[in-house]
Length: 325
Ligand SMILES: Cc1cc2nc3c(=O)[nH]c(=O)nc-3n(C[C@H](O)[C@H](O)[C@H](O)COP(=O)(O)OP(=O)(O)OC[C@H]3O[C@@H](n4cnc5c(N)ncnc54)[C@H](O)[C@@H]3O)c2cc1C
Image 1 (cartoon, rainbow, N blue to C red):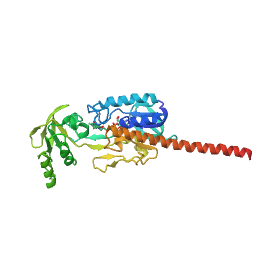
Image 2 (image 1 turned 90 degrees about the vertical axis):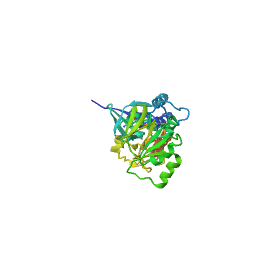
Image 3 (image 1 turned 60 degrees about the vertical axis):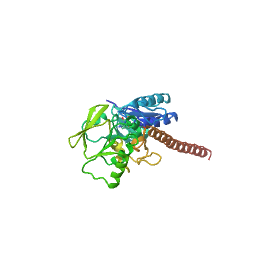
C-alpha cells in the first residue's frame, strides 16, 4: 500500500495543553499546522483541572476538546494517531504515524508530555488521579481535612510536611529500613505528622473510594487518600532516530529532555513544549510554554523566509545588471 504524505510548515507531536497552544499560536500566524495526538493526556484520570484560571474543575478531556474546536477556524489539522518515527527530509522532517500516513514539515514540535511511573503497590494504579495523588495544587483542596497517608519515597520529607497545609491528619508510612534525622523527626512532630514504621503493601477500596491501606507489618489503616511520588519518565521513541536524548532532571524526580531558554532542543529544527521538557509545568504553564514555543518557531521560519527573499532579490538584481552590462 502506498503511504500518503501531507506537507505542513509545522508538525506537532502531542495534543495536550502544550501542543494545542503551540498549534493555536501558529495557526493564527497563518502557518499550516498538523497536530498528531494519541489522545492520552497525563491528567486524564483526574475528574477536574484545577489552578487554571477561568476553567477551574473542568474535565481534562473536555478542556482539550474545547481547545481542538478553537483550532478549526485557523485551519489546524488534528490527527488522532501515534507518531512512530521521524527522519530528516528535504523539507525538514518526515514523521511516520501508526495510521499509515506520513507527515512532512519544516519544523517539528515535540509536546508529548511525560509518563507517571507509579510505585508498585497492589491496587494503587486504579485509584491514581482520584484518591491516590501526588500534587497538592492539583488535588489538595479536594482532600482537605481528610485522613491522608504518605507513601515513603525520596520526596516523602517534602510531601508529608507540605500536605499538613491541607489536612491536620497526615500519616507518613516510613520504610522501616530508613532512619530519619533528628531534624526531620522534630519537624514531623512539630507539624503533627504521625510516623508509622511500616511500608504500604496494598490499597484498599473500589476505584474512586479508597478506604485504607494494608501495611508490611500485616495491619490495616483507615484512610481517605494516599499521597505518592511517581517517577517521571519521557518516551521520545518517535524522534529517537533524530538523535534526541533524555536526561535526569536536576530535581531527581525522573527524566526529561532539555531545551534551551527558547524551547529549542539539541536537534536543529526540533522544538520542545510542556512536560516533556519541564516536568513541573501545570496545565496553564504547559499551555503558556506551547504559546511561547509556537511564536519562536514562527519567528524561526520567518527568518528563513526573509533570508530566502533577500537572496532572490539579489539574484534578480544581478540578472538585470548582467543584461544591461
Ligand atoms: C493525576 C493528575 C492530575 C493532574 N491535575 C492537574 C490539575 O488539576 N491542574 C494542573 O494544572 N495540572 C494537573 N496535572 C498536570 C498536567 O497533567 C500537566 O501539566 C499537563 O498534562 C501537561 O501538558 P502537556 O501538553 O505537556 O502533556 P499532556 O497533557 O500529557 O499531553 C501530551 C499528549 O501527547 C500525546 N502523545 C504522546 N506521545 C505521542 C506520540 N508518539 N504520538 C502522538 N501523540 C503522543 C499524549 O497521548 C497526550 O495526548 C495533573 C497531573 C496528573 C498526573
